[in-house]
Length: 205
Image (tube, rainbow, N blue to C red; front, side, top):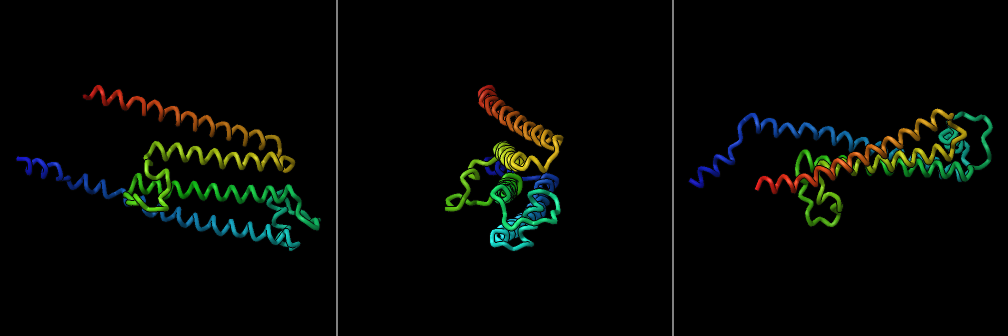
């Protein structure tokens, strides 16, 4: 009798098996994000190379850096790069790194949560957050990462405020506040759901 019950428990309908296998349709999406990661790595090295070239006095690199900073094609190119321009380019590099970190969280965390286990337990390079990742944890981490990226963008905008109009400054500030409020709402909702789980478990007993 016990063996028959176990057999019935293990038996999965064809429809359920097909639907469960459909999760592998997400695999091309994650592979596409890996390709996007490669593009960001290439972009990072292009920007870093131009920054080094501008420091060495290369006119083309300096022109490209100034175009990134001022968003204008200046005919009069200064002889050397300014400290503000260096700061803005470095913030741009940090922005690329943070977006790359966001991609890693989505790729690894999403694959682990929605597609298949990676079985990285005991691996020395296993990310600390991956051991307890789930949909709620991943959602909060993504919201936090987006706020960090928005903060870098906002800092770049205010450092180079003369290159933007007032509407752009206000819009970016409002968008950043919206991200903050969204992250707070997500964290608050997750806390309410976590607090409700023990109560549901007690009532079920």
